[in-house]
Image (tube, rainbow over all chains, first blue to last red; front, top):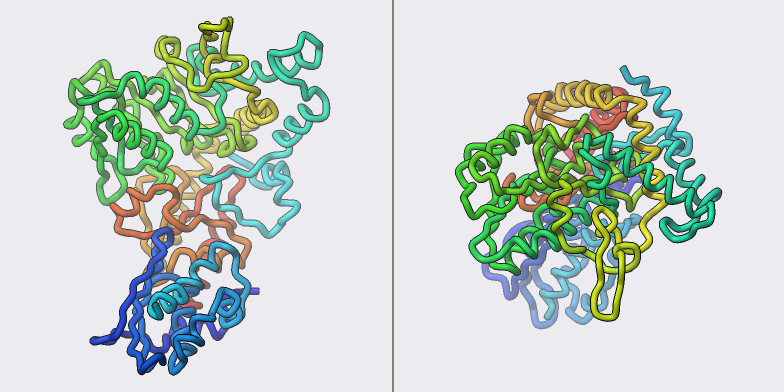
Length: 118
Length: 406
C-alpha cells in the first residue's frame, strides 16, 4: 500500500501552521544531514501550554506532513501532555507503515517539538 | 546486438519478480544462474580450503581459485596473473594500497591528487592518510557538464606529488574520464607519480586494458559485474607490489615463520592473509565467462543506446534536471536527476511502488553533491539486462511522481 495516502498528501500540499513567528518564546532547528530534511520550529507559550506554534520545513513529503500534523495536535496542549509523545504516536498519527529509513523522516518533527519543550 | 529476452532468462530474480525494473546496478548487479551455479558447485562438490591440503578436494579448490586469477588477468590485460590480488571489494583494494604503499610513501610535504567526483572509497582513505602523515590532498574539480578539469590537473602536479587517485567512471555522474591521456599527462610532468584507478564502475561496463592505460594500481568489485558479493580485485604492477609490505598478517601470506621474524610470500599471496572468499572468487570467474560470452563491446554499445534513449525522454520532462555530460561517448549508463521541489526519497519510494528500483541519496559521493549544491539526487543505472521498456517504465513512473505531488 502506498504511504502517500490522502491525509499525507493533503498536509504536504496544504501545510498547517507553516511560517515564522517573529518573536517566539523558543525556536529550534533540527536536521537530518543524510537526507537533508530540516525543520525550524517556533512556539509561544501561555504558562505551560502552547499558545502558538509554527515551523518552516524543507525535505521530503513524510517529514513535512509529519510536522504539519504534529503542529495541529500540539496547539493548546500542555508541555506535560506533549512530553509523553513517542514514535508509536507519530506512526499512528500518520497512519502508514514506514521502513526504518523513512521512520527517521517522520520523527524529525517530534524531535523538534521535544526540544522546544525543554 | 544483445538479446535482452535471452539475457533476462539467465537471471533467476526476473522469474521471482517478473515486474522488476532493476535500475541500481551501479550499487549491485544482479546474478545470472551461471554464477549462482558456480558458487553452489563449490559448496556442494569441493568446498575445501585452498593451499592447505594435499588431498584431491583441496587441490581442486586451489586449482579453480587460481584459474580465476588467470581469467581476471586476461580480462583486464594484466602482464601477469601474479599481479592480481583477491580482496573483498574496491574499498578494500584501495585501503590495502593506502595502508601498505601509502604509509611508506606519504609524509610531510608529499601530495596526493584526487577528484571531486570520487566515490567515498577513493576519497576518505587518502584524506585520512594525509591527515595522519601530514601530506597534502589536492582535489580536482569538474565543469558544469561533469567533465574533469584536465588543465587544473596538470597544473597542480609537482615534484612532490606521489599519487593520483582517480575514478575511471563516476558512479554519480557517469562521466568516463579520458584516463590514458590524463595518466600520460601527469607522468610527463612527474614520472615518479603512481596512478591508482577506481574502476568499480568501468570494468562491468567497458572493455578495459590496464597496460594500455598506463596506470599502476587498478581496483574493482566483483559484485558490480555479475559476481558474488565479497570478491574484488586489486591489480598492481609487479615491480611496485613486490616492494610493498603486507597489509594483513596471518595464514598463507608467509614462507617461513620463526620466533623472532617472518619471511613473507611474494605477491599476490603476500596480500591474501587468511582464508579468502573462495566461493566468491569462483563465482567471479563464472561472471567473467558470462561477460566475455556477451562481449564487453556489446554491453557498452547496449548501454549507450539506453542512456541516449533515456536522456532523450527525460530531458523533455518539465522541472527535471539531469546531471552529467550529454555526450554519450564519454558517458556510461548512469542517469542522475532531480525534480524541482520533490525530495529524491519520495521519488524513489513512488517508483518502488511500481517495482522500479533506483537509488536516492548522495550515492557515496558527498563532496560531489556539496559541489553540485544538491543534498541528494535520484540515480538510475543500466546494465546488460535492462531494456528500453525499463526506461519507458521509469519515465512513466517519474511522470506519476510529478502528478502526485504537484
